Length: 204
View (cartoon, rainbow, N blue to C red):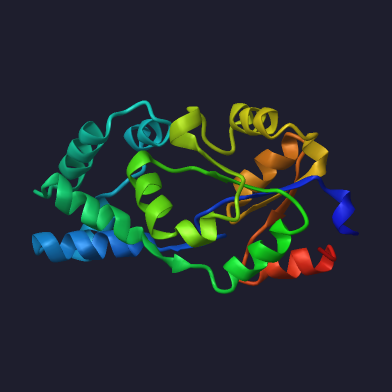
């Protein structure tokens, strides 16, 4: 397989480009509220409120309020965000160089299930590595989440290349399967080296 098998590369962000760890959120909130970390983790459930927020259909302040109620904690909005954005631990090892090399050969795009506070945070904090992408599609902007077919249809239409000519990377198997169902070529990212090894095999 060679690089000319594809017209573009599409990447998930969390777990592929950016290192994320949900436990960091609860650790920070526990620190701010003197609550037990395990209890907060047990109480948290990504329900319809979470999904509506990720697709831009629920305002930030209402989301913050409902999560605080779910967890039984009292945090200011600033404290909530302090913990909420703690999910980002840094870049995935070696990813910036890998993306830079790939971008010299093919256009790169990103597609993330994310919310506006996270998007605002990572856009500033990780501007360097994210600069390799021609465009970043966020679920909170387009109103659809992976693995919904409507989400992939929106992204494909915006990119403008045939689905079969786009290679997609995601650490969620459900998203990989959803992409394949929509005609994309897709790679399940299972380690920090998956992207580099895959692109090396493409002779990019």
